[in-house]
Amino acid sequence: MITTRTPQTASDRAAGPLALDLDDVTVGYRGIPAVRSLTLEIRSGERLVLTGPSGCGKSTVLRALAGLLPPQSGEVRADGEPVRSTSRDRAMVFQEDALLPWRTVRSNVVLALGLRGVPRERRRPDADRWLEEVGLDGYAGHLPRELSGGMRQRVQLARGLAGAPRAVFMDEPFGALDAQTRATMQALLLRTLDAHPATVVFVTHDVAEAVLLGHRVAVMGRRGEPMRALVDVPDDPAGRAAALAAVQAALTSSREEWTQ
Ligand code: ADP
Ligand code: MG
Image 1: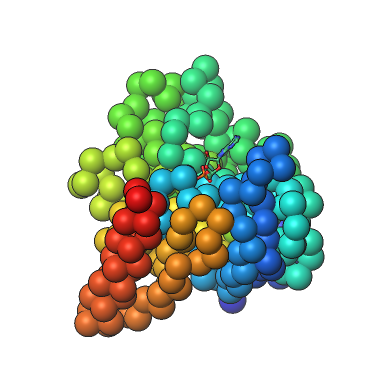
Image 2 (image 1 turned 90 degrees about the vertical axis):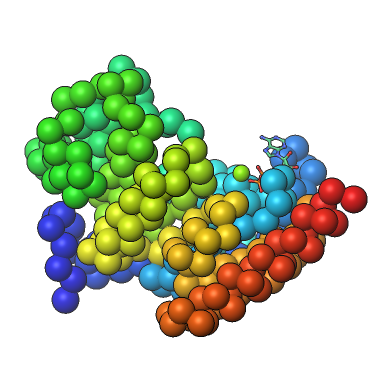
């Protein structure tokens, strides 16, 4: 049984987190591939972290998973069905401030709930419940510019997870935050996902963050190269330390080639 404080429809509950599948995917811009022949299976409920040098195609992979960018060849699938467009099942959370500045915090979350098909009368109470969940009760009526960077990122998290998406794609969401706020947000994300399970693909440059959040860490290589390394992150401290070293080594070799 799933116990969530945020109401979901019966069909959402039955469906659960999405299994995602990149099958020999080549994807890029104006006919020029940015990512070539990428094959990767992401299990239902898994947190997969994508890392790699700047420009290697991490954001491009997220866009393909979200259905924002169609592959030139190969296929992206969600629960075995080809992804051809965006869907309310799959949500994006960005690093940059993607909040609408003229709308209140609540109204930004209400808008996302509307896009996910939540009935009108449920949007406001749901939004307030999500704001409470990310520690922003009392700020629903504020405008984004009246909040700190960390608080705005909490709103983005609420907005991304509200409406119980079955998969969430997060593009360096904590990249602009100071170390302490970042640690708080990482803990908040893990707590929130415990209560509202979803498959997560999370992009970060930060190796410690990758190993903290990921069940697996995929290290992407040079532009056009398939995956450099796929590292399992065990639950015990020694296993985590070994995973961190493996990710660091793959990243270093990838960066060195990148800058040659
Ligand atoms: P990352 O997120 O790993 O830094 P991106 O996925 O943003 O990398 O970019 C991968 C490659 O695709 C880069 O070479 C980048 O210049 C190119 N690229 C990204 N976005 C666009 C775009 N909108 N138009 C053309 N090329 C792009
Ligand atoms: Mg990027």
